[in-house]
Image (tube, rainbow, N blue to C red; front, side, top):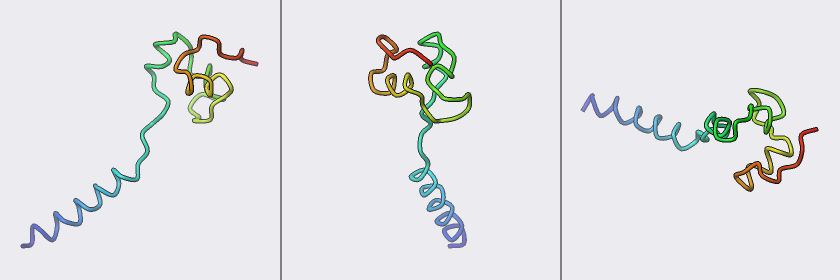
Length: 70
């Protein structure tokens, strides 16, 4: 019975964290696939904000026809 009192709250906590955590969007494999640095799509390295090229890539899943970086 004591074990259940410990396991149940831990399970609820872990389940809550898993349901509320968002998956990461920027992935190194995109950079490798496109042979381009992260800053091609992101405003700044390490920041989630996308520039126009990044928004295009998110929608089309390719850099073919993407707007030119300013």
